Image (cartoon, rainbow, N blue to C red):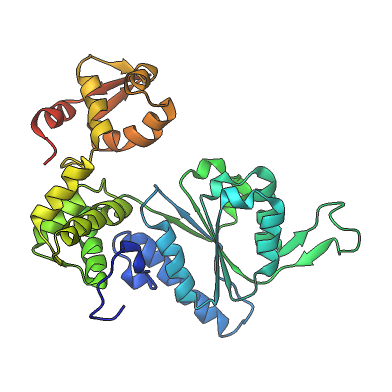
Length: 328
């Protein structure tokens, strides 16, 4: 993007180097060492391969961006992006493996969605670089097809759903964690600068980062984008603190990043000494899985609630939050 061009969408910018990734210092260090070793090995062995790589961690913490950065660092020509649901189709999975060459990176996001048969085929492809054709697929084809020396990167939010044998074949194992406010501020500033989105003060960055639930995806895709939308809707090109506050008012996001349904959850808990999951689900009109997998993890992490056996309890911190914090 040229210096005079002003972007319109946070996703217009792609990270092309590990040096552009902020936060996750252990992941970056591990990957840099592994990539440097790979290029050193290639000086004496052209058939050396990188990985396979496993990226593990919560949703929105940068696994996809890191996979693309790895692809760029390796200078591979072809990037095939897919996910576990798509590659459950055995013919789709085999097609991806067969069209990949030595300059291909295969990135499978949410790989825990792969069924056992797909995981077994992928395991064989990784460990043996061979594809065994199912019986009866074709009468004339060879039973075993050698595969190219491609790079494969798997990403998962639920590693326990993967077969042990597949997990254990990974040579580079990266575990992502949630981000500090300072790291998120750096990420937001980096993206705003790349898009030529101006902001009036560091406080703008801090507010956007603080209400992102410790994840870059929310900081960028929701918070920064909405602040820019408010700014440009008023025919201005500098994001002010007033723009940020208006963005969060429209989104109904409070100063901890909680939205309206999450505050309703806390309010329901505050009315009772404790509540069971099915009762809360009925009160909010939401499925149990939505509450336990979407709403509760951040609140548990920030100690707004506690779990005791099958009961949910609001903490003093949670009570203080709903009493003293309102949406701007």
